[in-house]
Length: 108
Image (cartoon, rainbow, N blue to C red; front, top):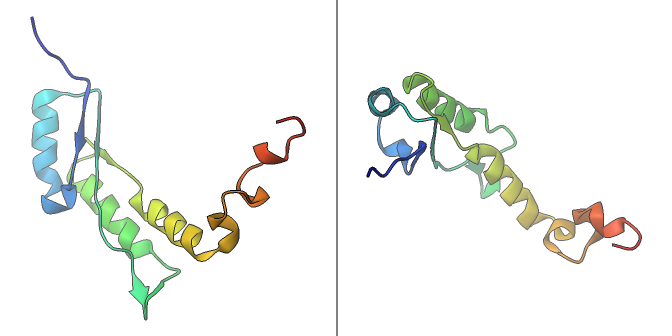
C-alpha cells in the first residue's frame, strides 16, 4: 500500500528561492501546489499605503522563479481587506447590513 498525495501546500516560501520549489515540483509532479508568501504590506506613519504593487510583485516574482510550477495565495489582497475591515466601523460591526446582501433578503 502507498500513501499518496495530490499536491503541495508550502509554508513560508518567502524563506527560500522559488527555483528550489520547481525542482521539487518537477520531481513529484503534483496536481496542484500553492505557496504562502507572507510579507509585510507597505505603511507610512502607521497607515497602510494605497499602492501595494511592490508587495504583489514580490509574490509574482516568487511564482516566476518557481517556473509556474506553484501558485501562491494572494496575501496582498487579504492584507488590504483585513486593513480596511479593521478601519471601517460598518465592516467591523457584524450586525451591520453592510456585510451581506443575504441579511437584506426578506424571510432569511
